[in-house]
Amino acid sequence: MHKKEQTELIAVIADFLEMGHVENIMAMFKQDTSLYALSGELLRDERFMVRMGMAVLFEELKQIREQEVALAIPALLPILAEETPWMRGEAVNLLGIIGTPEALAYIKPLADDPEPQIREMVRDILAEQGARCKAKG
Image (tube, rainbow, N blue to C red; front, top):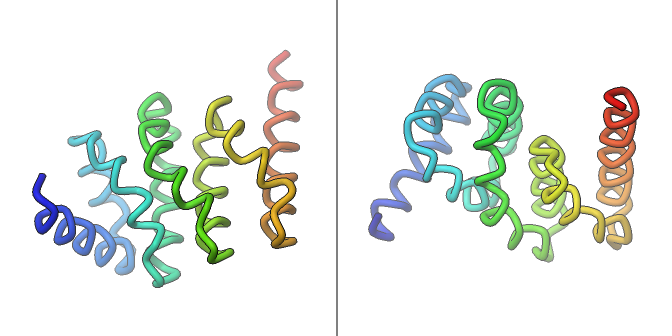
């Protein structure tokens, strides 16, 4: 995909998420798993509803396409290093939703993040995952 096409697609997806059309975007992700690679750029959107839409999208996709959501991990990793705390927090949130051992390994270092809310998010996600593991075992 050319850069211009990718930029336009990101804008369309973000606009649909802002309007609450998560089901349309979910259909797109189910049809084309390469869209997971756009997850990081979508999280950079300053509109809260877009970022919230991403969380809802991933929660839904996790239920029906659990193996596929991990495809977003490489796109989310650069966001963990962002200077802006809310961006790091959004990436931590999506990685927590993905919940694979790989995703959790990437958020563990943020348990020492300078931002207290991010440290709390990481602790909560890791505690929740630990509780799930105990419940299964």
